[in-house]
Image (cartoon, rainbow, N blue to C red; front, side, top):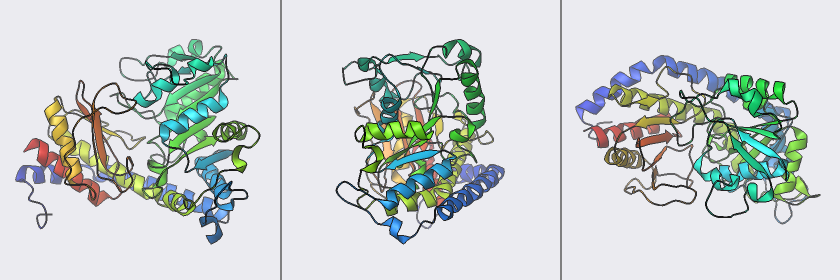
Length: 415
């Protein structure tokens, strides 16, 4: 790297020591990527994907073979009865909200078992200041189960909490919090408790940032419905936009009615020229996710070695691509984001500054020099300008590029 970047000896020493510490973790990451790659390829083959599926449609999209087959491929990959994969989902939040409105009705109750959800979802739940057509405005009650002091789900409180609710909601990733993300094994235990004490409750999991981080998905661990974004893990850095919903066939069908119209559902919705990108993105996703997780583990080793609090640590189980680094001051958070931006292939010369963003209560600083705007599977870092001034880093399309970005962040911040 000295041929291109003038790294300080302190940064080089930190990186060399960190990479050596990561060896065992990297081996495990590669094993998971190998398994998930075979899972994806076998799904393509089972559904007899051919070149005609890669072409798109216009207008109403009647008889879109590529769209319909991609749904079936996703369902197999996720271990679900059915799936709905559409480029027209504007974001992960939009996908989640479409799913919630699809399966909930006036008079229903939904409870979040993982505490306060991600900031951008709050207005849809009725927790924002403005009236914007939230669930509560449509007569759906929102409840919340606080997390324990250690950031874990309160398992003992679940039996009472899920009585008389229509849906128990779980956010797999940590969002803008320092709580641990929830593993698939933990999701399985939570789901068992929900169903034991309320068999009719829907168990719904926000799967954003978690796809392919483990060998199994929440739908294989008891979740009735999961949702995610294609500019995160399952799009592999190639899908340009979109999201997916997967789970029980009857619930997916209800969600399809929500995104088009009752009685029409999934039968319409042209794919334009996006089928190829979504198929190819899914194909690459397991190895791209592996690169992102290696980048996260390396960042934990580098900044943990520099005595900054990191979560997860190098040797902890990974269930998503998110790495948090508590930096302690707005100056250090800004410096970290500047360094990540400097390592980007796109807009590397741009200097990130904190600013107002829709859906967020505090000013947010974001570093993201991405081929697709806002793509979290590409190396990025962001954080709200509030205590404890932590950076949430995610992504890395390739391990070498991810390593470079982390080193440049260290260079900008430590030296």
